[in-house]
Image (cartoon, rainbow, N blue to C red; front, side, top):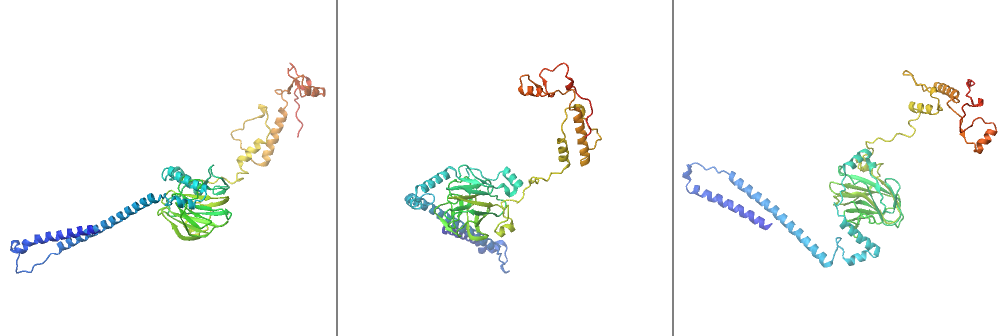
Amino acid sequence: MTRASNWSGALATCLLCIRTASALPHIANPSILGWNMERPVVEDDSDDALVIMLILISAIFGTILGIAAVFLVLYALVQVVQRVRRFVFRLDDDGMSERMRNQLLPDEDSRQSYELARAFERQYPYGSVDTQLTPEQQSLIREKGVDAWEFDVNLDVNAMQQSKTEVLFMGGDNCVQTNLPLPKSNSVYYFEVKLVEKPTDVSLWIGLATKPFPAWRMVGWNKFSAGYCTNSGSVHQNSPFRGSRIGERLLSGDILGIGYQPRSGVMWFTRNGRRYKEIVSGMLYDLFPTISADGPCSFSANFGQRGFVFIEANVKRWGLGPVEGTQQPPPVYGANQNTTLLETAESESTTPESDDDSSIQPAAEDTVILIDGQATNERQHQRRQRTRSGRRSASHRPPLYQKEDPIAAQLLEAGSTSLVPASYPSKLPESLEPTTSEPPPS
């Protein structure tokens, strides 16, 4: 900053010297310009104002350059100091030495989980998987509304999905995420999670994280994530070792809400409809609602499909999507009963079919089908009469049988006339001749 100020001062001095030198000949011999020395000289201040303006602009520009240079130097010094400190004390990305990690991770399982999580981060850095909303997912949100969001329970997670937004953890360290990320079109998005069943010794972590996320880690313990611990009331961001306590401990029946502002990357929390003042910043990623647990418990999430406990979210409509989409709901069960189409189909299906082609008559073009109950009964009675008259026509023969069939032999000994041998005789017995008598009136 001092060097830039010196340059601006030198430039201003040069301009003044040039103006003074250009004015000396005129002052020495003013009659050359035809000036009348007897008249008063009117000085022109426009050149002085221009010089002053140039001096101010150069000074401001030099000051800005000086401030920027100071910030760059400080940033470079901080980076160098951090690199030297990590090299000397052998610190990891969380700023923890091996001795500090062993103190904070006392058992072998926790240390193994930490190392596997760091390997997972190196294998799947942020941006390696495209998690932005695709046109197909946006179309799904327009069709289903807020019902498009649901939790994905993978096979490697010891949990059972009771519904789209309800999950039961069966035990162990598990983590679930939604199928869709938070949108970015609105200024604020909000959702709530109710602790349905939670033992006192089980911790539930509720927050936001990028995808993919380790299925055995608590949200907030890995990079690009932040989560609220229900047992301690603290919020962790990108590290399992550093957390800031902002609220109280949550029990079964409590509701934790999370608000997110995608334009500024700010994240805040509510408890039973009351908002905490503390915020989490720097979350400018494609974030998914993420819930983790270290034991058996269950929860129910509300993405806007019903009213929120936080009143402001209801008034300003901060849900993840519209309550109802463009897709029409299915018809109500039983709403299509007693319709003309179904009555016609039922009346046709209850009539016994006749094998006699002569009994089937095509309807005339001007025939009007009535659904009236009396007309239907009369039509069924007429069809039954035609069926009875043609049931024992000449084209039908009794069923065949084999002579060695013992059941058929017993029926023939009893005088049954409903069976004939397998080889038909040239002429049927008189007992089997078709009758032409009219059936008795019913």
